[in-house]
Image 1 (cartoon, rainbow, N blue to C red):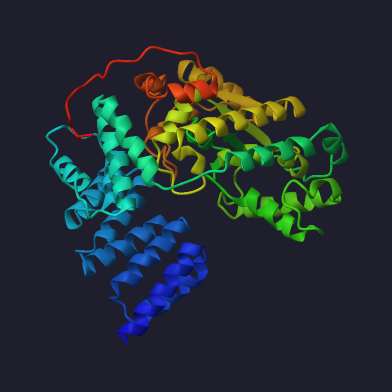
Image 2: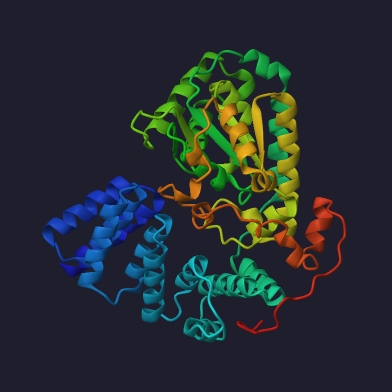
Amino acid sequence: MKDLVREKIKTAMNKQIEGDLRYAEQTYLELLREYPDLSDASHLLGLVRAAQERNEEAIDLIEKAIRLNPQAAAYHHNIAGIYRRLGRFDQAETGFRRAIELKADYGEAYQGLFEVVRCEASEPVLSKLREQLDNAALDEQSRCYMHFAAGKVCDDAGDFERAFKHYLKANKLAGKSFDCTRNESFFKDIVYQYGPELMTKSEGAGHSSDQPVFIVGMPRSGTSLVEQILASHSGVFGAGELHDLGWVIDSATRKSPDKLPFPGWLADINPASFRLMGETYLARLAAHGGDGQYSRIVDKHPLNFQFLGFIRQILPNAKILHITRSSMDTCLSCFFQNFTKGQDYSFDLRSLGIFYNQYHRLMSHWMSLLPGSIHEVNYERLLQDPETEIREMLQFCNLEFEPGCMAFHETQRVVKTASFHRVRQPLYQNSKNRWLNYQRQLQPLANILGVGKTEPVMVLSDNPLIHG
């Protein structure tokens, strides 16, 4: 019987990883009806509930699993992740620390902990981190997490030389690769297909709804911050980083006569299909929440910058906000972030610089092709004069100014992106020109981006918190 239960859980876990939450949910519910004290089923159902945005249920289920099996490090780590995205950082810290106590080589828990806290040199957990960095038996994935954690510790301490060494090792250990040539070809195909003739052909064909607001740009450019500001408005629901536009495009690709990849099928499509695709997207957007009470729903997937022409075709009245930030600060922040999926270009400085240039050229094309349709929000200007930038952004979205948008850090909502901490603090300046701490190490990236040469900066601290 135990073997059968383990097999059911293993199968459901694989389905869960593949995104089949319904299958996993039904399996765990069935197991819990028969075995109410099955801690793994309670824990895994909690993760399903978290993916369904039923976070309090998720916490209850994982707390139950912890009561049943308090020695399971993964339970403490995963409940900490839920607390973190809810902004309950003290509880998140407790969970991450407990996971490390139970499993000293839990690399992901170290990374999670140092994403929510700043540690002093005397912090005992740093000794554990140093020990693990010297652990020859540590697998590459765990070592990758450890180096990302060590990089964050050193960066917090101002030990930038060591911080960069750790981040270099971490990114290399991640084992990601990105085909810059293939991406360049894809972006060129988009530019080739999307010209004035195509936009004129599809003019007026899409759905007339003005409810969607798309926030686009490079990851780590301030997109989460802008969404948090908008979501602090009484008329706006922040749905987060959605994949629904990509789903609509993939669905249309599968139905195209020659199964050509996007954007190859655009030239032959019946313009009437654009309205149907707009309706499909809106239905999926509504399913994310808002209960029909909001005039605007935000889709904050930064890489939707690739599809701005398509957005204008299927939803001509949708609002598009393009977030810009210093190229060097943006790329540094990407390189220091251990993205779980979808940003493979960010793990190598050369690929990162090339991708940034490709993004910049494509955005220049959209700005030329779609004048007046895209509102730029500049991160540095937002820090310098927030009220002016926020008022202009709201006006573009046809929303009245509300003081709550200035107090965005007080808004209680789930934030799943790496900016979970940033959006719950008032605007501050120390993220501006952060790359200058690493200007010597980043000179090859600066050359790719065309940023002028600068002199090396002195390391602010020689305290070896984490050895190189």
